[in-house]
Image (cartoon, rainbow, N blue to C red; front, side, top):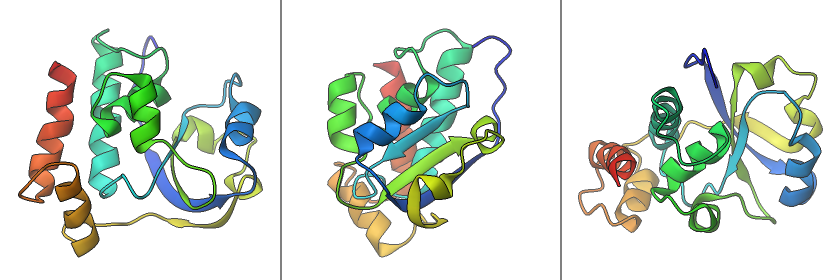
Length: 160
């Protein structure tokens, strides 16, 4: 990941048009940028993914990454674990419902259109101070329910 720059990324929510494994295998291996799918029941708010992305970016930049790909490193940080299986089980997208879609500028400029993969696409804008986000933060074991404590937990997962 030489000459990597932290770029813009978007977060959307939508319903996959096919099983998750089939969707991911249809785009994996192509040089189309980063796209990762998450379980919206685990991700607390937009900031949760923003900080997971930033930590993954710096892990690659400093050569301290644990995963081979940026998308998996983001998943590890979002799940706050270094075990890929645990990260997929905790924060990975599940079949049968909506998923959160995090993708970068390079994916945006690829020939693949999100509308061909997902139905009901819309911007994801869960704010950290919403009641739902606070409850999700507390479910992660962060008693305060405060996004600052969530961000600190995501960052501390880098130090394990």
